[in-house]
Image (cartoon, rainbow, N blue to C red; front, side, top):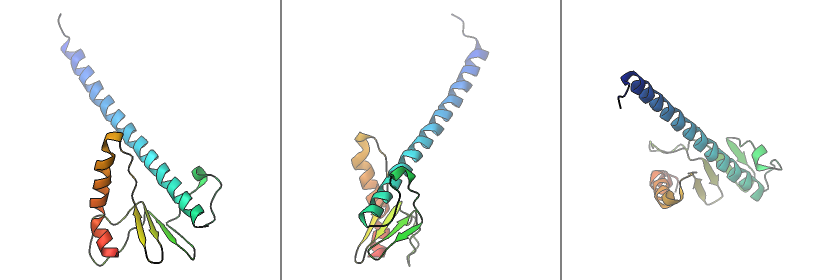
Length: 132
């Protein structure tokens, strides 16, 4: 069987293009899932701390800073420290009187949950030290 070289080249170009498109769609889907989970967590924190919010989480639009007398919730907020840090913008930062909680979202596959958890802990270790 003789392979048409021009056809093979066109097919390869098409497959490479298709692969790039699929990768881009996957990245878009991941970002959408990530942002939806972060939005739901922010909404739940608002409800938990009696901050006025929407009835449904999917209608909730997090603001950069949401606060009341009990808590301050920071959304995708750059934390300023004395030291220059590579990773200083967690998805959500929960600031209470004597406690700061860093929340950074990941949507890993089942087999990568532990790996992602360790990655996030390591990623924000310097920020944790700076804000203590």
